[in-house]
Structures are given as structure tokens and as C-alpha cells.
Image 1 (cartoon, rainbow, N blue to C red):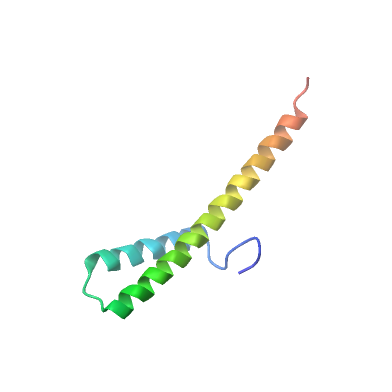
Image 2: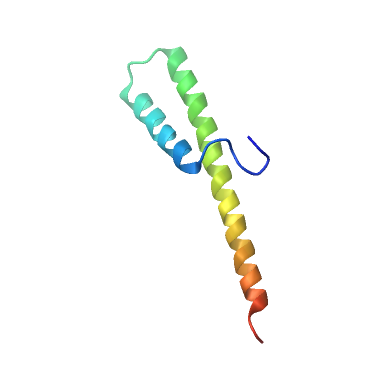
Length: 72
């Protein structure tokens, strides 16, 4: 993972997170497996949040740049 971008895309992280949640909700896993899934889910959620925060920042910067170019 770089400082700016995670190793996997937002879409990949979101898809894997959905699968982790599905497995946890389905049950039938051992406590150790459930804990491992939970930990992976937390990592994936953080990755998604990092992507979203970056997107918000880029959007805000683009809006600010556009606002600076408007004639008075």
C-alpha cells in the first residue's frame, strides 16, 4: 500500500467486504475463522474509506480550482 492509494481498488475491496459479511452472517465458521474474517473486514472497510476520502479530497480540489477560474 502506498501513502496515497491502497494496493487494491475500491471495487475489489468492496466486493471482498460484501463476501466477508455474507460469510459472517451465514455462520457455520469457527471462532478463529470468524475473528479472521472480522479482521479482514475491518481492513477492507478501512481501504474503502481511504479510497472515498481520497475521492472527496480530489473533488474538493477540483471544485476549488473551478471556483478560482470563474470570472468576477
